[in-house]
Image (cartoon, rainbow, N blue to C red):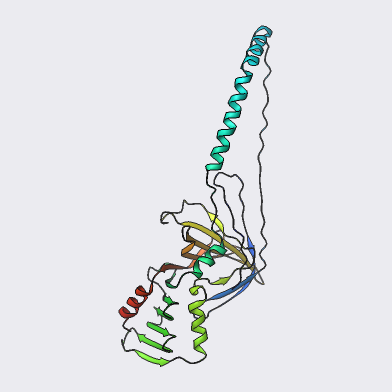
Length: 293
């Protein structure tokens, strides 16, 4: 996947708000999970400035007092200049020592995912605390294992052994089959393709928009980013939003929420969510053993 993404910097005290509304066309397809392709993202920026007018009241002038104040001002002028210069120096020093907040970009997320070798992904539907599907993926072991609630089955693909093992929930009896030649490249792609985390291809120029930190239930230190898109249909438009919960220390997503709304809706409605845990080989082997394989 090739994605050209530009990093986006945010200043917490800035009164300028930048909103990226991304417009694309896409088609979603399941390769065991899902891969989407979008194109045509316009980005619009709106800046609003406010100005205030002040009126100066008219007053009677005492010329003697004014003359005295003028003489005092002349005597104080050198000290004022020194004070202003000192304030400028101090302010400039503080500016240099203040770290600038920088947002996480899609490019940084992709690069971080490329370093991950072992991962656990759980997918949820709205209103359910139990995962609809669980996936354990290991690039170092060439393992891809899924546990699907609806099918009530756990399946283990082992590229090194060229095997597929199926374990139904009800019988607990393992069925072992040799992988067909056509299945091998498909499973390899699932293992190597950003570990299956990226559900869609992002067109060049797309950006994440930082969300304020006031959202409840978010772990400390996690940053939230939105990616919005619009898909036109024959009668209306469908708006999609992906919300990324990212650890800024690693640039790795911990959770991704997918929401949608139609033209008639005021708010987005979440339709699914995935949670991600980053593991090592030992964790994967332990899960396989506990699963009964």
